[in-house]
Image (tube, rainbow, N blue to C red; front, top):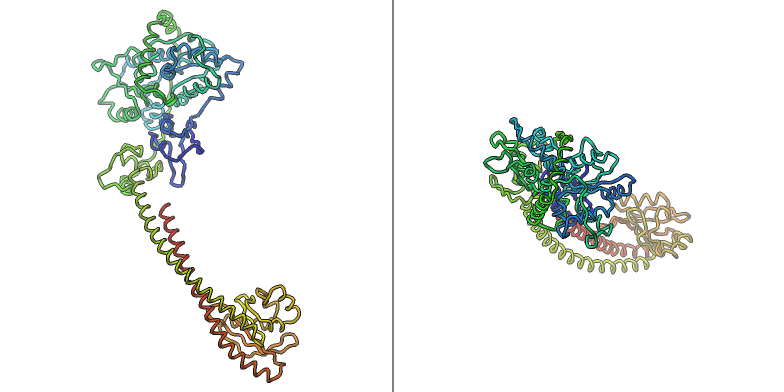
Length: 617
């Protein structure tokens, strides 16, 4: 049964629910962000609900189904726990609550106090007819769930008696018949765990919080309403049942130390410890244990947060006294005789949810990881566990993460802060280096642009065709003479893309000439004065590599021009080649080496961020 669920839209990921859960049914997995409920482990105690300020823990609700039942043609009865006097302390007379329930639409209004009287009589007989077996009372469903799941060997020690609210439902079924819907209003969430053999005994459950919501939705107030009374039968001493020892007192069993064989425990730590002690020391304690997870039903998770234990307990005691003074004891005795033969037995089945225990070595290793000194474990309880060994055990079992330990988290935060400080200092230093590098690069790029402009001017003034291509044979620079060499089609392209920049050389020159360019690029060796045909022209091609740039250049000489012009051209070309190679080398150095330096700077920044990010995970 999925009794509790988490609304991730409301969850603030504070993990207070994880810390408050006594059986660690709410866990944070190593690869998860939001808490997750392990429903099979839940005992319905409601500690998570009370600890969650954003209200992200949502208990299973029958609210809408209850409103549906109120519209059903069949009659609907409601059973309300006597804790209502503690819940609605602002209402002057309890009889107005009964009238408000009638206005909601319930046909019959019963109190579970009479069921508590019947259950108390069962406990009286069980404990008075002691035959050597000690029992754990089964009044609190959360304690019953805790025993069956985490002390399954004690399941047979649970008193085989149903709860007061279930006993009252059986009374109603006998009195009115099965053709009736029954709604139970309880201060408890785990009461839904109780029914396992007859799912139709009680049709739906409401908490007192939900009952207040119902009154508000139906616009029902006590200010303009008259009194009403419960339908019979009603209890007398059973009005004390919301208190931890209420059913025991209602049974007439004494709790005076010199005569009693019953010990009562209440509250989260005391009640769970009592089960452990019963398991380990029952042969020496020799008492029946009456345990309540909360400080009685008056502090149950189905109650609103307003009000305190003392005022609620006082209200319950005063209500019981008043009921006893005004009760028709003769009618009550007749009702007890009429219903005492009801089957109020309960059966409980073990549902072992215990996990294998890790080894001592595993536990010690985790404790060491948590930063605890060997042999000195600080039991601060802030993680939700009583000892560091329990915390380490839960981590080994996958029910917790080290981050639940606040000492561990604080230490990690300090480590992260130190890492961030170091990374920040490194980043600032790298940023300064980068700024200086960018300034140098800007200066060098300006120089490179000046050199490139000079190169363009030089190439345009060359009397011979000239070209510079990239590694993938794309044109980087060319002069007008080269465009003219290629003919009219190239001139048309040049009008659109000046200098044919970006054009594919393999589309402009024959395949065998392109192979010469590839040879120079691959082998970094120049080719001098190679005679080749370009359509009807015979040219002499000199191809040379450009250092540090993955580019190559070429000069074409038309072999059909007059010799005088050829000699002058050769002389000029040789001079230009020398100047050109110096300039190209300079540009290659600027664009090659400085780009590498800038890349190194950027990579160092990236590595600084990445290393910081990994430490924070």
